[in-house]
Length: 286
Ligand code: ACO
Ligand code: V55
Image (cartoon, rainbow, N blue to C red):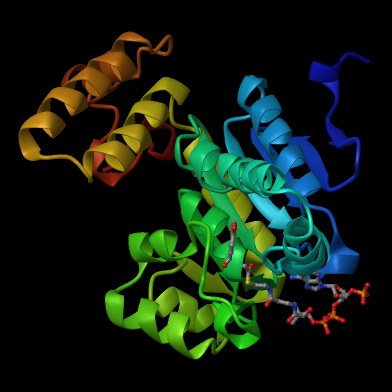
C-alpha cells in the first residue's frame, strides 16, 4: 500500500498516531504512559504529521487529541527541560525552534480546519497548540492549568501569547499567577474552548462539528480562516487590501464554484436560504 492510501499509522518513534476517517484526520498525541507530555521527538513528529495531513486530499479537517486519559500534560519536564538544560546552547535553541514550529507556527497558519478535542489533562505548553487550533471542544471533566509557577518557572514559549488570544486579561492572569487548575466547564465559560460536553459525548460532538466544516469548499475555508487569523492584527487599510486578496484567491481558486452555485440556488432556483445554513442542510419546504 502506498503512503497516501494508508488510513492509519504511527510515526517512526511512535509519539504520534494518525487515523484518516472520511474527511477527518485524527491526529493523536501518543505518549499515554507519560500523559502525552511533549518531548523533542514528539515535536518533530507532529510537524511531520501535520505536513502529511496537509498533503492528503482525503482530509478536510484535522482533530488534535490525545491517547489515553490525557490531552497533553505540557512540555516533558525530563526530556524538554532537564536533559536539554545539560546540552550545549545551540541544542536548546534548536529544540525550542522545533517546538514552536508546530505548536503555533504550523497550526495557526494551517490551510485546513483544525479542532482540538480535549479529552483530559491540558497543562502549560499544551495551551499553545490548544489555542492555535481553530476550534476547541472539551470534556466537561477535562482539566486545564498554567502549572508553570507550581514548579518554579514563569510560563514560557508562546504560552502566554496564546492565552491572550482567547481569554480576558483577568482570566489569563488568574490562571498564570495562581497555577490553579480549572475544569472543561470553566474553560468554556472563559472561552478557552468553544464548548464543554459530557465525556461520553465528546467524540460524537466533535465528529458532528468536523462534518459541518468538511462540507465547506477547501479553498473557501482556507481563505475564510486565514483571512481572520491575519487581519485581526492589521490596521484597517492593510486589512482591506489583504482581505480582498484572500477573498478573490478563495473564490477564483474554488473548483467547486461554491459562490456561483450559492447565488444561483438562492436567487434563481430559490432552493435554499443561506442565512439558515448550507444548501445540503435544507430542503426548502415552506
Ligand atoms: N513531563 C514529563 N513527564 C510527565 C509529565 C510531564 N509534563 N506529566 C506526566 N509525566 C509522567 C510522569 O513522570 C510519570 O512517569 P513515570 O510513570 O515514568 O514515573 C507518568 O507521566 C505518569 O504521571 P503521574 O503523575 O503518575 O500521572 P497522574 O495521572 O497521577 O497525574 C498529571 C497526571 C496531573 C498530568 C501529572 O502527571 C502532572 O501533574 N504532570 C505535570 C503537568 C505539568 O505541570 N506540566 C508542565 C506544564 S509547564 C510547561 O509545559 C512548560
Ligand atoms: C514553556 C514552553 C516552552 C518553553 C518554555 O511554559 C516553557 C511552558 C514550548 O516551549 O520553551
